[in-house]
Image (cartoon, rainbow, N blue to C red; front, top):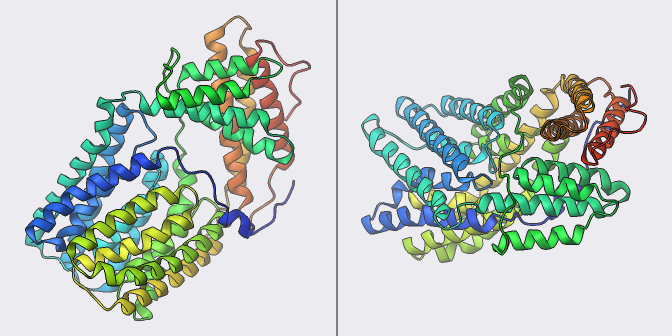
Length: 506
C-alpha cells in the first residue's frame, strides 16, 4: 500500500492558465444571442425586472456544445426542463415562506440534487453551477403564487429559444461537433507521441480520453498510425487544422465511442457535501447580516469538487476571481448606471468574456461572472454599490470557508474501494481483449475501446482518491501494474499481435 499526501496541491496547479476551449466562441455567441433577444424585448417593454426569469432559460444555451446535434437536442431539452423545474421549485418556496433560513435550506437541497443529476448524466460543461446560481437566486425573489405561471412561462419560452439558437448551426455544418471532436483527438494523440518524461503519462491519458470521444473513423486512423514505429504527429496536427477549417471530410465510421455513466454511490459524497456546505454557508451568511445569502450558497456549491485537493484549488480560484470581479464591478458602476441599455450591453459583454476565459482557468472566468451576477441584481432595482460589493465579498469568504470545512469533514471514505474496483475492471477488460483472436478485427476494436475506457476510469478514480484524506492507503502498486499492462496490451492490439510474455499478474 502506498499513502498519498493528504492535501493540497500547489498554487501553480490552481492558477495555471491553459489553452482556451475550441468551442468557447460558439458557446459565447450562443449565450449572447439567447440572452440578447429577450433582454431587448424587456427593454422595449420597460420590464427589465423580469430579467431573472428570461435569463434562466437563456443560460441553457451554454450547454451541449461538445455533443453532436442529435445528442445536443436531447441534452438541451433535459437542461431546459431541469432549469424550469428548479426555478419553479425555488419560486414556489419563495411564495410560501419569507423565512430566509428555510429558503437557504431549499436552495441547498436544489443545489445538491442538481450536482448529483448533472454528474450522473455527465451534463457539462458548465455542469450544475449555472442551474444552482439561477435557482438559488430565485429562492430569494419576492413571489406571489398568482405570478408563478407567467414567470415560469418566461423561463420555458427563453429555454426553447436557447434550444433553437444552439441547434441552428446544424443547418450549416451538420457534422461540426464531430469535426471538432476528431480534431481534438488528433491533437491529443500528437501531444502524447511527443511527450516524454513525467509529462508522458498525463498526455497519454488525455489522448485516450479524446480518442474515446472521437468518431470511430478517426479512432481507427490514429490506431493505425500508432502501429508504426514513428507515428507522424505532424500529419495529425495538419489533419486537425483541415478538419476544423472544413477542408477535409471526416473518414468513414462516425459512430460514437463508449461513454460510461458513473454509478450513484460514487456521486453521493459530493452531493452530501453540497447539501451540508451550501446550507451552512447560507445560514452563516445570514448570521453575518448579509443581504444576499444565496451568493454564499452558490460559492459553497461551486467549491465542492471530486476530491478535497481539487476543492482546495477551486476555493483559491473562486476567492481570487471574485475579488477581482467585485473590483471590476465597482469600476463599471458609473457606466452601467447611465441607463438600462448600458446595463444590458455590459451584461452581454461580461457573458462573452466569461466564456472566453473560463476554459483557460476557472478564476479568470469568475472575474467576468461576478460582475455579471451583480448586474442581475441591478435589473431589479439599484442598490448602493458599496453594499453590493461588501455583501458579495463576505458571501464569497463565508461560502469558500464553509465549503472547504465540509469537504474536510464529509470525506469520501470509499474512494480507495472504487480504485480497487477500477483495477478489477481493467484486469477483466485486459483478459477479454487478449482472448480475442488476432483476425477478428471488429471484435478487437471493441475490446480495445473497452480496455481504453477502463484505463481512463482507473486513472480518474486514482486521481480522485489521491486528493482525499482520512482514508486507508491506496493500492498504488496494483494501479501502476494495471496501467502498465493495459497500455502495453493497447499497443499490441493496435499492431494486431499479443504482447510478448503476457501481462504481469495483478
